[in-house]
Amino acid sequence: MKHPLGVILAGGQATRMGGGDKGLLPLGTQSILDHVIERFAPQVRDLALNANGDPARFAELGLPVLADSITGFAGPLSGVLAGLDWAATQDADHIVTAAADTPFLPADLVPQLLLAGGAQGLALAASPSGRQPTFGLWPVSLREDLRAALQSGLRKVVQWTACHGAGTAEFPDDAQFFNVNTPDDLATARAML
Image (cartoon, rainbow, N blue to C red; front, top):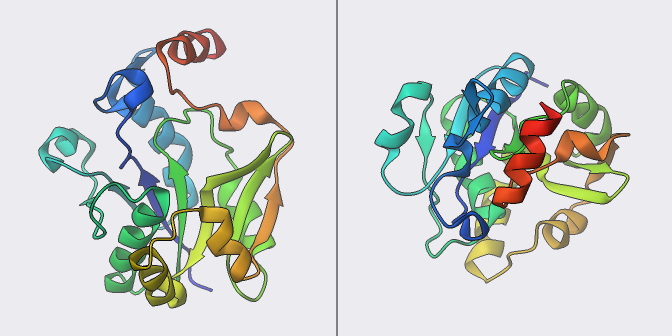
């Protein structure tokens, strides 16, 4: 298996934060996204950002910005598909996804997902509080299956991954997956930092 590409999922609408790009909010001396990139980039061959709207707002990150090909905010699976379509043009077999609002993501995310992916090469992360469906290992070979599922209306990550025998990478600490959804969460993240 070739070293996977990384895709940061930032395609949501951030309604609980009042809209806008949560990842661009300050956390310490950097943005939330800067923290995500710092932890994620060393684990993957190359990195892209899945986001909708004007890609220029992310220009300073220097990453390719991939828009959803499925319209109407179809959820994280739509971002996964955008990443798989990009990976297919980059001679990659797999991508690993991480959420743009999780500044403390595991430093061993990719190796643990690769171990859990097995022969199929599909796995989701989990922590003591449950599955973390925006953190996964996804084979490019399943992209047309995923496209068909999304076009038929499927939106639930776990529903689609269960159909394909996804493995589970268990992580011991919920804090690694702490995500910033509300202003209170941002205050908590600042305290954690």
